[in-house]
Image (cartoon, rainbow, N blue to C red; front, side, top):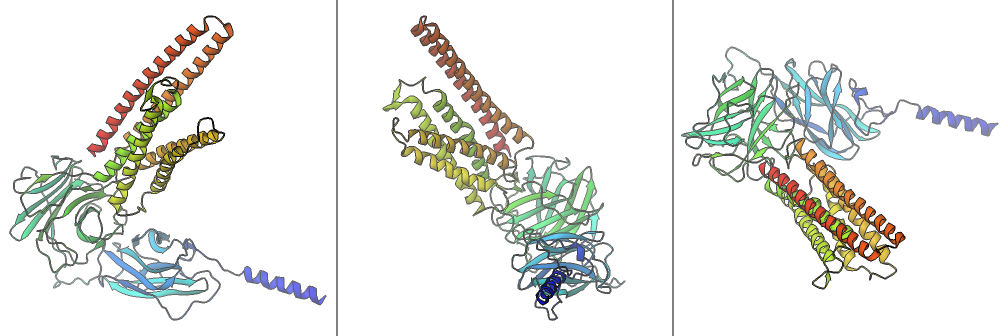
Length: 587
């Protein structure tokens, strides 16, 4: 009885322990504790914080983007909010945008969307950045609070961060932002190339037209007048860069449409993080216009701005980027939905006036797409058809000591491997390494590249035709090649929608579907023809009447049909190929 009592007691203790309110959130979905910010881990909070919160400003205005940084010893989870400094028990205030979507995510607390930031996994972190957007109804003072989880039972709740405040406006105070006036008429491109340095997309477009992206620089002694316009769907921006990548401290200028108003801001770009907007504005004589579906911004800035960190001097050579995108309800800019326009080389906007265009698809990415299309939609398909259907057609004709069908097949397959190899290297050269933003496309591409290299290696060690292992080789050769072709088509379907290639949608999908249907249709036609020819030969053999003459006649007709189909197929491939390459060249 004693043993039974002890066992029942132990079970009761275990049940009580595991039924206590303890829950972990390794995925960061902690909306349940939005108010208390206390993890449901079944233990008490630590008393002395090891982690700190830092901000890049001490004062804010409505719509400002405040950079908030959390740092300290390695931690697994966190929960960040902004609240009224006079009511820390109150609701979350304002909204956030992410600096790194891999480490952090946005949560909605109460009725305020994106009003908190948390972790995405329990992987170790030592530093997190986010940007808080000040709402229109923000209190006079705001304080940032964070809960940090080092381990499941070791955490700190509501670590206090800096307090930032809105500037007190008095009759004697001087506004920190220069006055903004409205433009009275659209920009004019007539001086482009004469007194203005202009970037336009499409080339030679009229800035009065909605679909025209327009950027102009006009020097006036030590000042530079900048004009920028584009569709009024959110924001337009341009950036000056030392390389062909947006990021790495590039100098950016934003024109943001927000509730029938326009804000002009400068920012520094760092990788794929949210732009770091400047607390001080280096722009002067700002004016804007929202009309006819266009957002138009004009401002001046000094050519040399040594006092403002992150702003480039304009009398140097830079790549120029033009981008546009949407703005969320809380005023946060969203990632541009298409590849930014980029000039084809560096320009000095203080030099001789020019009127230039640009491309939304880099040359190396265009070449990558074109070469892969030639390899896996043209040369490999023709090579497979020749090997599958033309052995009897060219069985007695030799070329350099080998049957013609085999030489043609081998030549086309080696061309496929060569084109794939060259194309495979180009994105790595352009990106400078592996791309984390291309989903499964690069992984499938690497698989296709590996299979393409395995095929010729296998063929080099193929057994003689009568060897017992020849059937095994034939099966492996066919299955590897077929797998590579299927994966190549899937990879191209995924690649044509990537921003960097910038093909028109849905034209690109329809073209690919048409190309695949064209190949499958011709393949099925030749299979049916081959089946019918075999049936005809079987009938002739059963009848035993004029077998040799009939067989010869049937074979001759069959060979002529196959050659005709091959010519039609090659012509169709060339037509599809030219159409595709022309479209790639136009973007």
